Amino acid sequence: MNPLSISAFASSPERRARWLIFGGVCAVALAFAAYTQHAWEDYYITYRCSKNLATGQGLVYTVGERVHAFTSPLNVLLPAALSIMTGNRSDELVLWLFRGVSTLLLAGAAVLLLDSARKNSLGRIPAALLVGMFGLDAKIVDFSINGQEAAFMAFFLALALHALTVRSNRTILRLGLAGAGLMWTRPDGFIYLGAVVVGFLLFNAGRPIGHSRSGLLKVFLCAGALTTVLYLPWLLWAWHYYGSPVPHTIIAKSLIRNGFPLKPGRLLHDLLTFPWGMVRGTTSAETTFLPTYALSFDGWPRTVTLYGQCLAYTCALYWLLPFARAQARAASFAFMLSHFYLSSIAAYPAPWYVPTSATLAVFVFAHIAQHGLDLARSLKLKGCKGSRLVTAGVQGLAAAVLSATLLLLLCSAYQMRAQQQLVEEGNRKPIGLWLRRHAASPSDTVYLEPLGYIGFFSQLKMLDSPGLCAPEVVAIEKRLGSTSGIDVIPELQPDWLVLRPAEADGIHAASPRLLTKAYSAVQFFDVSERLAAYRWLPGRGYLRYDEKFIVFKRNPPSRAADLGRH
Image (tube, rainbow, N blue to C red; front, side, top):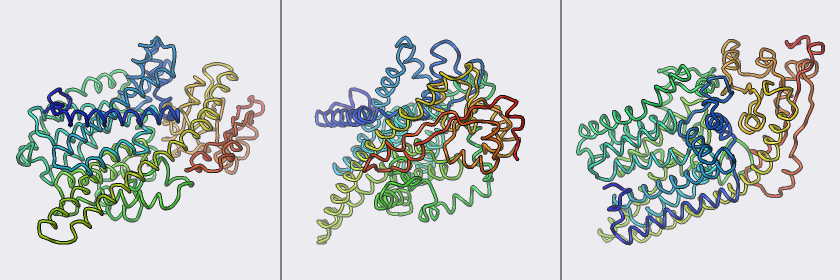
């Protein structure tokens, strides 16, 4: 049965439940967007490419330079189309329309997950837990409305899970569309679908679909062929237009792992020891249910991080139980593999990658709850007195987890509202506008790390670290074997530097003349007093990281005769 067809809504109670879930998830996401107004830094990296395409200047970051400076095809093409449809009149309107599309996809993903749960004998409590944890998760909601592609990834992954768990005559078509959608959303989308495929084959979890492992393998091969056909046009076009099918952003980010080159032997060791790594807290898995950068910066109570870690480890290790539900074991193993990828292969486990893994985790946890209810039912049939206690335990756990998820969402909304007002609107956007007013020409070059807002609102030539939009930066970093500004800045000789105080202090300590003779500080941007005025602010350390910036201008050659180290 096609979950999106009219026949799927034949039952009136089921139809009402689907529409209730769809509307509820939409309402939560749009309320989060309206309250926070949050637009993620990286959205404006991609949107500068989108805007150039919409105004006829090509799918490029810097006009005249064919650099693949974005990662997601859909995340760049859809805003470009929306900008064209609105006459390129309002960037804010484009962002809100993009939020609207993302919200609809997020709600669609919730409906698919609900349908999969109900058609695989999950009761009301586990189904409510599944939808609630998904629709109220802080990072899933935030990265679905802030300009990132989380909603697209969640929808296509949910479609893949639905195709593999709900019998249909169109399994291959739906699975192929899901795979293509994941690839069009992110070029590493095959990693997540591949992890699901491995899990379902390993635990023979697709018997309702393929009847056997060999039958399921045939389904995967046919769906993979369809995915390839649907994604190939973009791959070939990007190869022709940019000279490489690999996004330049991936090449630039790969330099972050210079000290940890990928070697098969090391990867195998990391994979085999990954469960132990999770227990020790050295992987990205522990971030799954936590707010953005909760473990990277201070400001969140230790009880919050412990809660998120315990929940994530439970989902990641459930596959080890031989008596566990097959579909949940498959998703649990896929969840673990997805974090192995983020922890050991990807440049770094950025928070906007985690919602895809979280989608797998909530699927697992709902099955864990059902496992507990099945145990209670079994005890009741055997006449054991512990049946009611187990049932009450599952109900209490579900209520506690949903309450914690909602509380973290509300706290995250408060944090991101402050982050948007102080850091994005109060610091980074004004820096971009200031540079645009004071630059000698649009070809002025700017070296910095936070590329998004400053790059978009300045419209100058950006030389970012690690070189997401600048091949010349990547070339120098490769030649020097370093991504440090101390080494790169003298080689680039940019017209402007935008540095955090800690970055400037590090450069000054290693090369005192660079920021005193070659460059001069000309403008300070500081929202620290406004930030300190918040008596209570969860995750304060994340905002504090970007509360101050210093803009440096390159001195005339007579004052900057030597850019080298002294």
